Image (cartoon, rainbow, N blue to C red; front, side, top):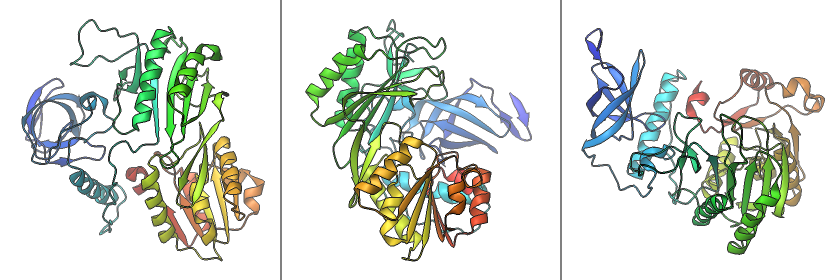
Length: 437
């Protein structure tokens, strides 16, 4: 062991009994060895666990739970068979009310510690009425490098999996039988595609050797409309091989309105295709938020929890405090869902988005919802306002809404916001750490 001050720092691989005090952002349990913080995977406040140190850093340690020695009074039964290994729903074993309370504390701490804000007010979190089977989009990866869990039998083949990445491993896929956060129909589709892929002898993609055919399966299921899109991502165009899967899915699910084949030869493990073929129906599905209907394509972003998104957009509307004289900028507008939701309260809305297919969807969405005061521009927000002549000529904003990806706002975008000096800024974030920064 290494001695740092009065703290004896255990080596990687050491097993320790740890009392879990709280939750860290991202869902790991927090324990302490004297003044050294230990982040413990699959642990919740109130538990005492036997844990193994997996990472050693100068200021903290990481560990994974081997055994629960004393259970927490806050623990609940976990419905997901993959919970221990997946990492997608990090604290599914913690009472939902306690999850919300922990997240509220995390947000306060992040804005104080990272953002330097003192005495910040955080409103109570609005919980979701439906905590399972709510997600309208899931993406799964085909692989010939299956991650075998401790509970799986020895001798099980490792050369096929359809599932999710093991935390911290780009090359290993945990085979998923059922995901509790997507719809029941989506789980049945996942099972059919997996079974038929193996029966047909379709080769999963090898992320290291860059060989194989089947790369990803993306399922989008409208939370209000009930329409389903299935997107099968492959490494080349050989769509005849996919036809039996298409036939089976369309026989089983009358609410499937779109099956597309995205084709990408890029080596990166991304599901965005360089080419797209429609194998059944059309190339979009529709879903609703409030009074508005939105067209969603395979590559465009839409809020992944349809019912909770409606509540979010109502808060955005309240915080924006728009008047009929206001010019609104919607940065990272995606398919235009926020722009369209707020358009009737503003004079003019301008939406900006990098993904061209999303901009095309936004234009179509505005047209189909009879919105006549919304305009959309394609370009990278790192430099859009400097390089795009059209954006240089539009009116300056009174109000800005920004909804960036997890990485947050690029410094160039921050400078553009400051330069344009909106009276109000509403920042929607899926990552409070980058938002605070």
